[in-house]
Structures are given as C-alpha cells and as structure tokens.
Image (cartoon, rainbow, N blue to C red; front, side, top):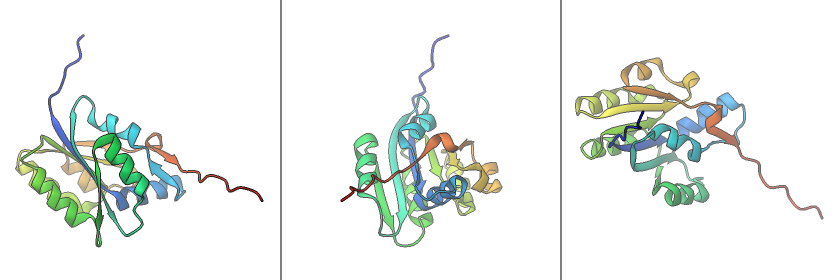
Length: 164
C-alpha cells in the first residue's frame, strides 16, 4: 500500500499556560515540559506546518523555548498581558483563510465559540490537550481530538551545581 500525501496547511496555536498547568497537574511536577520534537510531528502526520505560535501569559517566558521553537519550526512565542484566550482567538480568526486546519493546544472551554466560528468558515479544527483536564464540550465540538499524554512531555532536570 502506498502512503498518501495529504497536502494540507496546518497552524498550531498553543495556549502555553493552559497546557503547562495541565501537564503539571497530571505529572505532579512543575518541571514537566512539552516535548515539541515528539508532539509536533505526531500532530501534523503527513501535513505541512504553516505556523506555530506559543501564547504565554507573564514575563517569565523562556528565551530557550522561544529560540528552540523558532529554530526548529519557525515558531514564535507571543507574550500575553493576561490570558491567551483573546490573542489566540484573534490570531486563529486571522489565519482561518490561510490554512486548512488549526490545531489549538488547550483544553479550555473558553475556546468553544472560536471552534464553532472557525468550523463555520470551513476550517478543520483540532484540539491537542491533556484529556483529564480538557472540557468535554470542547472535545465534542472539534473535528479531531489529540490527547497529550506522558509520552509527549519530559521532566526538566536542572544541572547540578558545582561543589566547592
């Protein structure tokens, strides 16, 4: 059987605070982080990545994360004044006519109306989130749900300090 090439353009929009909080709750460890090198290919399958944008509330955005997302995926990190909900929703609406699918990385029910709007515009909408912390109404609205599991994150271990 030959492999079918799906010529589809995908934008991945990540609500960083929501995903981080979900992973920390399930892993029971605040050093747990998404392994983008594993997760992004899994989410895309045979489709092409158009954009990867990581929305993050707060001032403590890791420069290393921003640099890595840019270097690996031409991605960007967008700092948000408060919640990522509004900036992510605006960007998704702007991208709706430019992509075939949008994957929202969040389990927040605040995105239900956005999902409905995007689908009405003809965009395939998918959610990638930790199932245990994802709103059931959100899962029911999307075209596809990608569960983020412990295989998709790692626990960051800080380098040990030097002994004097």
